[in-house]
Each structure stands twice: as structure tokens, then as C-alpha cells.
Length: 409
Image (cartoon, rainbow, N blue to C red; front, side, top):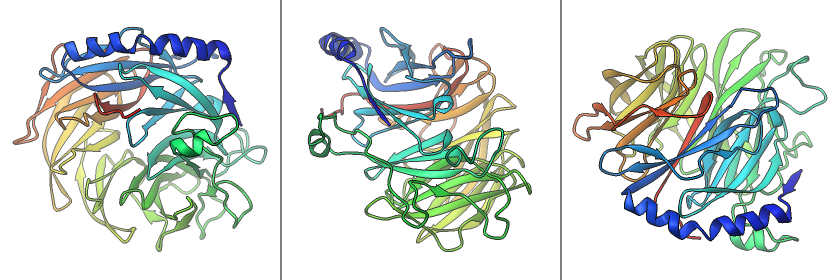
């Protein structure tokens, strides 16, 4: 189901856009290099909506300053994941408790304006990823009524086409660019999702924890945990031109005890997986989509998120229980630890700035804060950004970022 915002919201949108020029001057005046979007669960009330804190990052100091009128409503309860369109003009936010994804247009001043809401095919989305004209969603359970918290079953993956400007304009009524189309049909089961299941143990409950793409969108990988017979897996799919998914040979691949997050290297040759159960980072080589484990490195306690810099030289891992960040150098896929750096309490998400590949930030769930670091391009070491940490709303959960000044519409 898609929900279009009413005329009052549209008028407010027009009024807000008229202020974009002034906001842009503010951003330029503060040497803004990126805009960073941090969702917060805002768990103060059972029915309270989440928030999106928007920060502008200073190119010289890394200082993160919330833009005027931030935060913005996330459009749902308990936002848990974010993704941006390839042209950095659209932000997608997954709200777990509402089984929804909200599309926001990003203004030149970094502000976000809600456009549409779609429902996920399954129950409780945990992670989304966007690339190659599609948005991929990992849902905790397959659709109701057969699956629920009271009667849990294995999770699933859904694919939404991201419509081009021409495709969106051709709809009746016309929609903004990057609107999500109807989820892609899986003809093999007569549904619009792909179930996650073990052929050898079809009765086991498989719960996804993360999703990412590699190979310029040619492959999608889902990290998952077998909650019936403890163990971790990576489900791999080839993405066909129409968005349908085909299981990769050898999938699912064994992946430690509790894989929690995924990050491919920039060249698509390696996939890095944090293992929250064994306190390690696993390295897999990617060969025509198939995965082979080639190494591991120790992490801190309960690693929750990993990011690779744009040159593939360094990796950074957020250790949620230790409230710190581990830095690694990368050589032929192998990780060598460089040091650890203190964050706020319980970092569960991590990002790196897309403009300079220089600033790193963590969302600290129990600390209600964002920690910023500046990396040294020569050795990967980190220094705290100016005035870090920065305040956030209650229980920040996810991070996304776009470069400032590159949007095209």
C-alpha cells in the first residue's frame, strides 16, 4: 500500500522548499562537506514516532552541527535502517514497528520532505540497501497471517524498483523521482518476497540481521541467524535485470555464530562480516557472487557495524558492548588491527563521509549521541572531531550520509 501526503502537507512542502536558498547559504557558510542523517527510535512512548537528526559536517574540523529545524519525524515507529538514492536526492527510512518504508526528498539545504510510504511485504524490516535501481529489504518474518511474534517463522527478502523520473511522472497521479514501485514478484512461490530457509533444516527459524549489495548491484547478501539450531549464515542472490533474485551457487554460506553487519570493499572483491557471537570480523572473497571465507580478525565485544573506506585501505568496526571503535588496515582482504577508540555508549551503527573519505561517525544507542572522528589518510588512525560527541534523540539506530552540493534535482 502506498500513502500519498495530503494537500496540506504539499503546501507545507512548497513553503519549506522556498527556504532552501537561505539554508544553502548557511551550509556553504559553515564549509559543509556532507549531510549526515541519524534515525532515533525515540522510545519515550509506545506509540511515539521516530526522529531523523540531520547534521552538517564541517570540512575542516569534522564538527557536526544539527541544521535548522532538525530533527524531522521519521514517518513511523522505531526507524531501524536508512538508505539513499544513487543521486543523493532521496532518503529511505525503514520503520520496523509499522512495517513501512518512507521516501523523503532531500533539499539542497539537507532538509528532508516526506513523499510516500509503502508497506514491506514481510513483518518487521530490519535493514534496507539501495543500489542499481532497486531497494532491497530484509524482513524479520514472512508475511502475516502465517508469521508473527506469537508464531515466528523465518525471514524474507523483498525488492522494490526505484522509479526513474520519467517512470514516476507517468504514474497517475504523477509521483516524484525515486518513488518505490510495487515489490517484485517471485513467480516460483506466487508471492512478492524470497524466503530465507535452510534446505537441510526447513523447520528452523532463520532471522535476518543485515543486508548489503556488491558488484555494483549485481549481488545482494543477507546476514542471518539460525535461532533454532544456533549458527550464522549468509544468503547470496544474483540480481536479475528485472529485480528478481536467483540464489547463488553454494548459498547459504556458513558465517560464524551471529553475523550482525555486512560491508563489501569498493572493488566488490571482498565481503566483511561482523560476528557478534564470536567477537570477530570475517573476510569472504567474492568470486562470481559465490563466497569463500578467507580470514578473520578479532574485534571488541559484540561488534555491531562495519564500514570500509572508499579506497579500501581501512576498515572500522563499532563494538557495541565495549563502547569503542576498532580500526584496521586492509591488505588483499586481510585485516590488521591498528587501535581502538572510545565512542559513546553502545555504538550500533557506523558511517564514513562520502565527500572526503575522512570523517567517521557512530550512532550510540544507549548514549543518545553521535561520535565523530577524523581519519589519517596515511595510517588510518583516528582523532576525535571538534566538540565530539554530539547530542541526538533517544536511542539512535542508523546512519546515512550524502555529499553536499552534488544533488541534481
